[in-house]
Amino acid sequence: MEKRKIILDCDPGHDDAIAIMLAAKSPLIDLLGVTVVAGNQTLDKTVMNTLNVCQHLGIDVPIYKGCGQPMIRDKQIIAPEIHGESGLDGPLFAPLTRRVEPKHAVLYLAETLLQSDGDITVVTTGPMTNLAMAIRLYPEILPKIKEIVLMGGTYQLGNMTPAAEFNIFADADAAHVAFTCGRKITMVGLDVSRKALCLPSVMERMSKIGTSASKLFIEIMTFFNTTQKQVFGWDGGPLHDPITIAFLIDPTVLTVKEMFTQIDIRGEQSYGRTNCDFFHNSGQKPNSFVATDINVAKFWDIIEAGLRAYSP
Ligand code: RIB
Ligand code: CA
Image 1 (cartoon, protein in one colour):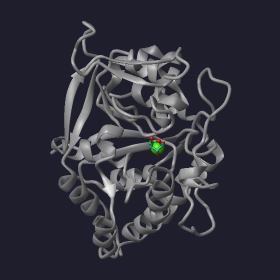
Image 2: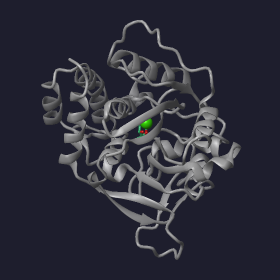
Image 3: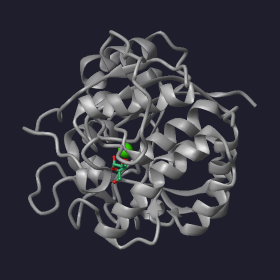
Image 4: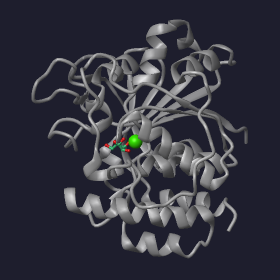
């Protein structure tokens, strides 16, 4: 089976780090590059976290620094209450020698897509600023985007406000650009990630693997599970971001439904909401595929296989 070429745009972030791990060693994924955006923490910290994870696990993929604030809104919101002051609290890393590439992430995205055969999937697991900026600066890349798969949004309850999920709320304008760009877009929202809870039984299962990646998984998820319990009361942290990669590895892990999705970029209470027309009563033509269910057992099997792909 041919490898799926992807660029992963992320804001590590505990769950982003697991998404990087899963993508980097999957025999079904060709991870061309990792682009970093501000989100869970400020850009300098999300970049540092990306470099640390890749250096620690020997992931030899180019890393690019992107946008440090939303396209239009004045400031970048961050989530220290979930990810800590560093954005990846928990694990300790050796002194960092890895460096980012000199090119800006937006330029890397545009140039790579433009030079491609139109076979690259862009996966975003943070605010969609880098991708949206690339689309606005270089609209000629649009036909070259095979598909966009994002972690973000919800057609149910938000996690930043009752209406909005963090990645969308952090840069709703960027999400608007992505959902209106005309390319195939699949939304992996809280609706399914809240079913993929890293429960004690999952931690027990992954702790027995004994690879460098499984050890890092336990260190990362121990912190993430604690803050998710404190803030939301979950018995295990919802493993949001890796679901995008699991979906590309095995699309049957998700059930998706075509819907018209519109981003609220003007609201007050509902700013940043992904208004998904679940029952098609808007009369609008569907513009997105929205995940409505997840095969949780299959998801954890994919995670376990991903962690086993690394050396002890
Ligand atoms: O709402 C969850 C999403 O926001 C995840 O991608 C998490 O890493 C944060 O970016
Ligand atoms: Ca993220």
